[in-house]
Image 1 (cartoon, rainbow, N blue to C red):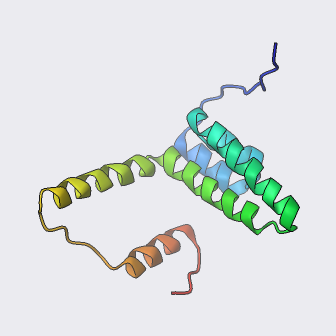
Image 2: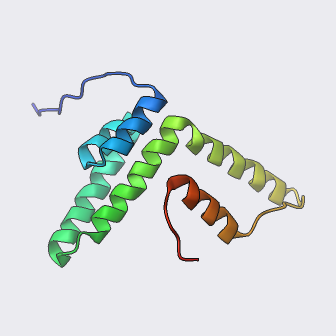
Length: 123
């Protein structure tokens, strides 16, 4: 018999999840804000990053990983993740059909997204 960690099931609204992520950037909170299906992936990635940080005495990979998963939790809570997937699928269909796909410069897209997240980029 193995012990399973107890995780209380307390449904939260997307706004509550985003507010939680803004206030608490701890690994425990980020994990709790992820959909249950993503938590195993988070655990695996986090353990690998911690092992690497222990070997290299550098927390940068851990901080980068937490920023990534925090962003993923926010996108999944707000539905933005699914929107991006749907948009990518539509673009792929257009490309495969030979239809011209109009786009924007990557720098513009990155700058816009960074501004939304309050991140300063050196472009």
